[in-house]
Image (cartoon, rainbow over all chains, first blue to last red; front, side):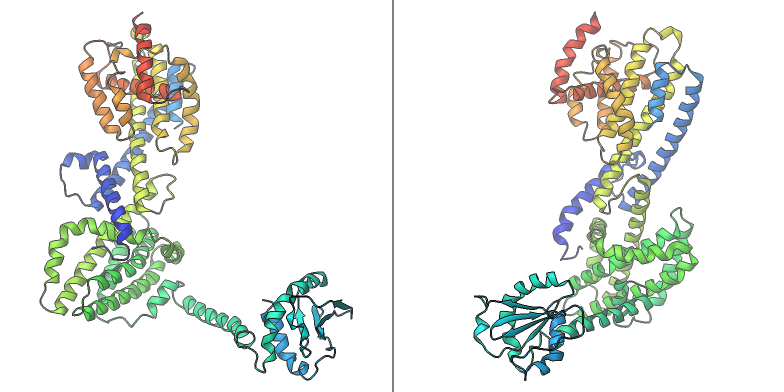
Length: 89
Length: 503
């Protein structure tokens, strides 16, 4: 299993990593819905990357839509302010 | 330094000095040399300018009584003034080491070896540097190259595999450069881990096998190194640099080593019965081969995981952590904030087309509240991963926070009866966003029929609004200067808002 000399540190980090992987598993909807307990770390990481990429795409799409909406409404209205604050993220 | 150089001088001129006990020593031709001569216990210093300097015999100079003390030269590279000061300091020192030169043979540490030590290590270093430069410009690799010669059968099978991996990675989204660096990172990390593993698992009977495995591992490293070197031109042109940089970083990146074995341990829990089976194998060669296969598969698995970690790291903005655990932490926070942001934006997108005159009397105060709620929601959502995303914070929180303070008392939140339900939620807000959403959604689901300030909104929007309002309250409570705990302060706020809303 783990090497003897690094066992002191691995014991702590092992749990951390397992916890983090489980957290990721909860966050990523695909894995969460799959209801499988034996998801490997590599799978979790892969799904996380895919999910983040899809979220990025979604954010850019929404930004586009918001900017389009911004042009259609009155620039002084509250909604414009909302949209601008959203877009300035 | 002063010991070395003046000793050198002394060595050369000592033979001349010895027969001359008291006489002045002819000064050498160097500008910087200051002569320090002993004359009957008194220090007479002659600089190049022939300026005698007399000093009374200092008390600590117990040596002053000795008559025959060869003159000493003290060479100071600095000016005479420094030499003057230097002289005083040297008094005591000379008292100690003056004894040594009395012997015919100068003490080894003073002269020969001292200087040779200075000289020879340079040669060694240069030789090693030449070696390393001739090799793959990595001391890690040179150590591996000097490792026992690789076993012939092992490296060739590894080679096509490595090359295969390279081509596969070259086609992947992550550049082959990263993959090459990845491979070297993993491999360089693997060696000590692998050898340590083998060292641990190897017993007396299988020690030979373990050694062979280590050798083959070392051989595989060299083969891998060769492969990386050869394939780096095949890959991107710039891959050579990260390949060179990575091993240097590897040695510093000690966090990766245990991380590799940790990740391995997670799956080893699933695979432990297999490994035990292999351990109970009959012959040592069989076991070594099985262990080898096992290790290879482990290594491949770890390679995949490391590659994915790298890809994840690239996706996360402003992630400068090399530690896996902290990187995963950041990934989690970033993912949460991204989800939140997408929620916000989708809500904003959906909200704007709903600004019809029919509900305008409701919307503006609500819209302002929602807008500020959303903006502050963003700010708060970004607040939690405060460190990684300061740029987002700067833009959104500052205007929003002030606006929230104004909007606070006027905010019509109670229709959702948020105060009671989210109070416990706010304390859990740090834990998981999803659970909060679920709780609020559930509470909203129960309360919707009771009161709804926006009658025509569809359910998802109401849910989002509820989320906004709850978090807005949280922000307000956090913005208030005397807010100690969000729940308590919100408990105080809510009764105030209830009458305001009812009126």
